[in-house]
Image (cartoon, helix red, strand yellow):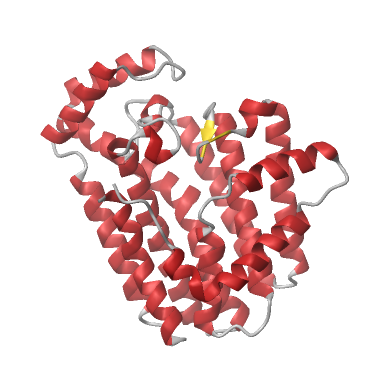
Amino acid sequence: MARLDLSRYFLPIAPKLMEVETELERVLQSDVEVVRKLADHVRGGRGKRLRPALVMLSARFCGLQNAEDVRFGAVFELIHTATLVHDDVIDHAQLRRGMPTLNRLWGNTLTVLFGDLLYLVAMGEAIAGRSWRMMEIFAEVTTRMIEGELIQNDVLFKLDTSRKDYFDIQERKTALLFSGCTETGAVLTGLAPADCLAMREYGLEVGRAFQLVDDLLDYTSTSDELGKPAFSDLREGKLTLPMLTLLERAPDEARAIIRSIWDRGEEVPISTGEEVRLRALIARYDALSETRELALRASRNAVAHVANVAGDPAAGELLREIPEALLSRSQ
């Protein structure tokens, strides 16, 4: 299993990403001790910073000449972090990126309030950018993400979850945030509406590919590789595309094992025997191939969209390579 290493793609924007870190530290400064404590913990478990990197690369590609990409890189990272913080409460998660979650250490109440604070800090920074279009993007992204969370929780532990439910959740919770990141460079540079749309569609397809691969990893990776328990989605009552495919191809066998896992409660780990049977079913009915194919298709679509925009050649090459790099996580 290949770990995602984007360091090569981020080298040209490394100084900008350092500025984003400084910006995040600045906006999360507080004279409230508990806020500082929670913020320090979140920053200590920093992820790949893929979303602000996409803001930086799109801005570089589109020829942005000011520092607003740093502001909005921080904004999108704050939105993403707020979502993760709330998700961990909803999912009763104990680990995030190999570290204890906020809710595990400080309880649900403080964690939910801190997630709310992150959204509001992001909003304040977006307003300070004085870009009406960026405010529209921010409002749309956050609204759709919350709608996605509502849909997801409405279908939790439901064996009749539909493909439409799955793709609605994927689009709203993941893909639209990516699209906002990549449209940012075009909007802040003042490119034509067609170019802004192409950059938006590029991010949308990257987000789709990213989520599809993420859903694959839950069934193909170990807990150590994921930084959280394997099969977490299933235990938490989420039926992603691999499991929906298995339910279509082997309904009786799949339903029996899913019900057995759900009946014990999400806090109880999946037994070794069940894991072996589930992996065998997935292999027998080829339940992962469609997810892989859709991820590949989304990756190719992303490359096609960015190819329609004239921009910095070096940054454009990186934007074309990143979708393929994301796919390597499933190999």
